[in-house]
Length: 237
Image 1 (tube, helix red, strand yellow):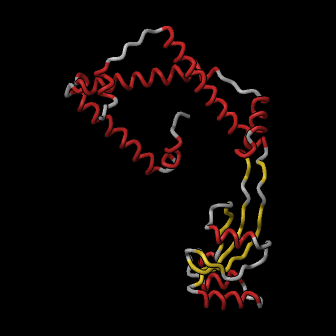
Image 2 (image 1 turned 90 degrees about the horizontal axis):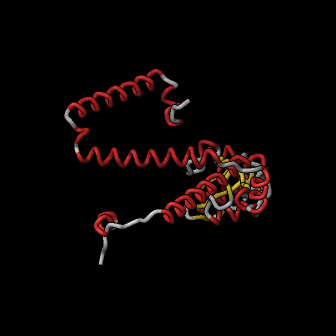
Image 3 (image 1 turned 135 degrees about the vertical axis):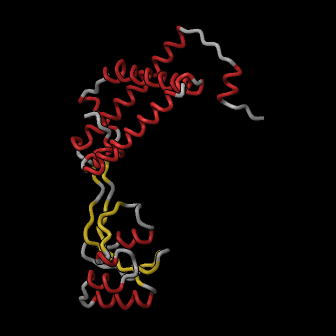
């Protein structure tokens, strides 16, 4: 299919299809109206068309004569994976709930109720003043570095199932329950193989294009018009 991905959702509904059709018709009507007004011969339009044509030719040439000819071997994929481990590592992750209390006294009272067996989720729904209260304080999974440092430090001191004493952050006083933890680990090669392929193909393409430009420059005499440079890159004192 040649349909751009951003239109997939729109095309799934009758209303979306109608809106796209209306938009296409309106654009065609405007084009016909402007064309009848001899806009195709206006200097601004010709300049834009020349620029667009230049970009299209370069883009198609690079795609068909360079990009489509490039390949990456399995050995190259594996070598890149092995020599760049930090790029393909899943950071350590935490799964937690929290209760954000109005003040330290409230936080201490809530913490005391949890310590004698109070249900954390129910207490979060009833007393937390944070936006996750309706979800029982559930924060889901988050990676190291995503939470403020005091919150993350408190999480690191807990084992799954344990609850922290009141912890102060810039947002207030938290009681945190760590539900699960996953250490940093390398992503499996098969999981990132295609991602690596795209990366290496892009690097090869850039190298090939740069080499082509170098070769063309060596075979071509290029004279620079100072007035053109002045227009493109204004000189400031």
